[in-house]
Structure formats: structure tokens, C-alpha cells
Length: 259
Ligand SMILES: C[S@@+](CC[C@H](N)C(=O)[O-])C[C@H]1O[C@@H](n2cnc3c(N)ncnc32)[C@H](O)[C@@H]1O
Image (tube, rainbow, N blue to C red; front, side, top):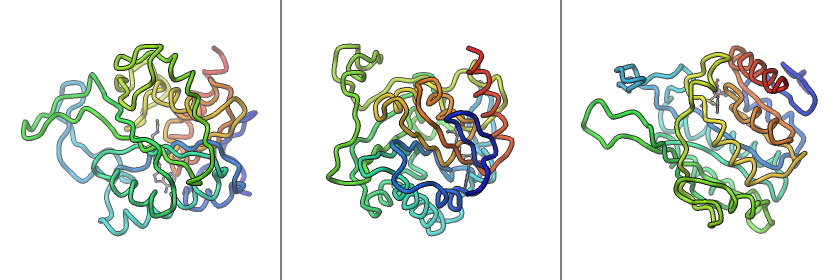
């Protein structure tokens, strides 16, 4: 097994290619995977950030390599995730139209059962500066189970108690989630171009795992999944190919220990 880049009790970060490192993880050991893969949307064009026109390009890892190569990669990492999941384990994968249809097709091809399609609605999404499209105000998150017949964890009562602008506490949680984009207060330890809000990961982990369970994120980024897992008493394994993102994760993890 490759040595972790960073190790703390119940918290492991690995540096390298997810396709190789997923093979090093014990088969059938993980309860929940959250994957926020490259969306392949950094191919030129404009976007809006803090009211200013900026390039849509996030990073080289987010460039499309063409439909076939992108799909090969998607199917490969989804299959490897399947191996490390427990039979009743589940995977959550986020995306936009750039990648999410490939992801859904790959999940079905790999034999997963799709459980829900969550719409993460962003009430404060930036406007569309080209004025030629509707403003993009949501991301899609597919939730799927490894074994079509196993009984997965769904903490129904906790989700029913949860308060969401679209689903007040006491009502069955719906598949439409109202969560603002990542606040600046969560970005004090360094910049990642696509950092997810902690609230999103908190909800995912609470819904689909219990304390002490292992949570895995093959595209760790700034470590949002790991920080949420730590806050909720879960074990965490994160993988990323960029050391500077793992450094942000370490800082976020350590600041959590001081709270
Ligand atoms: C969309 S970002 C994840 C952001 C993360 N959810 C967060 O909240 O910060 C995708 C991450 O995957 C990493 N990545 C891309 N391809 C990879 C690969 N083949 N193996 C490992 N990491 C990869 C990138 O470095 C990037 O940090």
C-alpha cells in the first residue's frame, strides 16, 4: 500500500491518480463515496465571479479530452469505486450537463441502482453574462447503490428533522435542496476553484452513513468531504493528484481540531 500523504486518526489523504490509488483500498470496506469529478467544462468561454466577467476555465484537470476519452475515464473510476464499496454502500456523484449524463450512463452500465437525483439549487448563483441562456442555478447529484438488492443506509428520521427552505423540519426531505454557494468563510485556508459548501457534504454524509463508517472521496480537492466527515465522527479517505489541494485540506482538518 502506498504511504499516505497525510495521516491522522481516522483521516487519511493520498496523493496521486485516483485510478491507481483506488486499487490500493480494501475491497468492500467503504460505506459512502462522494465524488465531485472533473466536469470537463474548462474549454474556453466566460463566466461571472463576484460580479465580474472571468474565464470559465478552472484548471487543466477540468479540460475535456473529447467525449470518448472522458467517458472511458468516468467508467473506469466508477468501476473502481464499486469494488471498494460495501455491498449496501452508496455513491453520490455531482455534475452539470457537461458530465452528468455520462455519469448516469456509466453508473447504470457498471450495475449500480440509481436511488435519487438530487437537485442542489443555488439561490445566490451568479447571473449569465452572455444573456443567451437561462442562468445556471443548480447542480445535479446522483445517488446510487452498489448492489441492486442490498438494503442501503438512509437516515430517514434525521433527514425528516432537517430544515431546508424547500422542506421545513418535520416533512419528508425532498430531492430539491436549497444550499447557497460556498461562503468565503469556508475558504480561509487556501483557494480551490470548485470547492463545495460544507452544508452539502454534511447532508450527504448524515443521510447515508453512521458514526465510525468509512467515507471516501476520490477527488478530494480542498477536502470538504473530509472536513464534514470529521465533524460528524466518520472515518475518511481522500485522494487527489494535486499536492497544493491536499495542503489546503490539511489546514482545514487541523483548524477543525481546534474548534
Ligand atoms: C471538482 S474538484 C473537487 C473539489 C472538492 N469537492 C472540494 O470541495 O474542494 C476535482 C478534484 O479532482 C482532482 N483530480 C482530477 N483528476 C484526478 C485524478 N485522475 N486523480 C486524482 N485526483 C484528480 C483535481 O485535482 C481536483 O482537486
